[in-house]
Image (cartoon, rainbow, N blue to C red):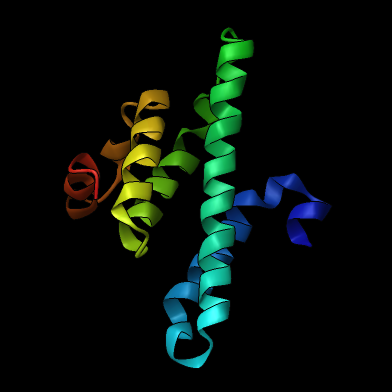
Length: 118
């Protein structure tokens, strides 16, 4: 609902989903809810990256640098969350094409994992 009310809450919503995933062991308590949280988080990341790519193709003169910190945050989540590697690698590559320097904002351990595509 927070995202429907204000699209500016995107990072807040993704952060809340990451907090739920990281704070509670939903796998033991409710595997369906864990899958639901991870699906929503990955869909939001995937769709934001897709929208940025589309915007860059349609209107390349419009700067998208405002979204670089968000995409760096997405890279951090992609590193932390247990998504399949075959999903992680393409989205990491797409983010790095949009923002080649985004991985530099990550802690060293995450930065090396992202550069390895994991």
